[in-house]
Length: 233
Image 1: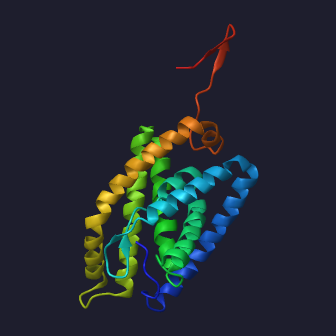
Image 2: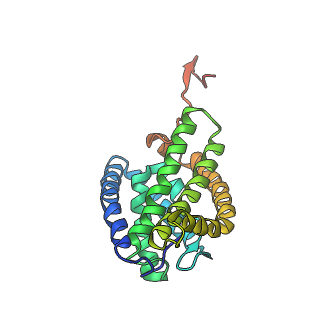
Image 3: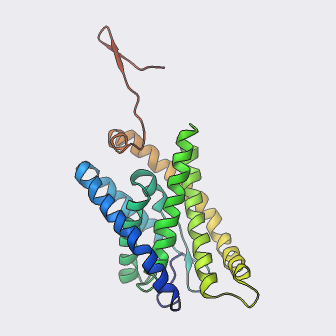
């Protein structure tokens, strides 16, 4: 998904940068607030950042000037919210651009918009709706992360179509880019969804209290009867 350095013409890379800046700035505020209220969440934040870095570095050849890979930002949005996920994503994108030549600085705004803003927003909305409908958490996590991954590439297809429309129309260009991405991205989205379910279940088992304090999950409450803990049915 990372659009390579210099691939987006002016004024498109500037437009995406300008749109992304205030959202990431709000994410910095949210991140600061979380670390102050829940300092014990810092290792989990680092884990989510590493998760995004590793998954998004596993790139496959795709559209010219771009690539296909999992994103990792959907799960981060479920745990910390989409704004914080945008900050983690832009940090990852900067390091990858400078150290791995994966993405670029002029395309940082566009890549942040797709992978760090729209994708996480989709995951968070699906997660909230899923919790309210009381669907199994594994199903909701899988759906949220998979749709987040696919949504990222829909946005990237739109960004490329806007910058490079065909003689027919923007829509024709969008379909062309999207069709190329679909070959690799649909199986990648399914794989990322399954991986996210495994990691989330692990975190629930070993960091359940922290996830509960972050209001991601609700731990069962206990009532005490004759000195014994009883889980309400």
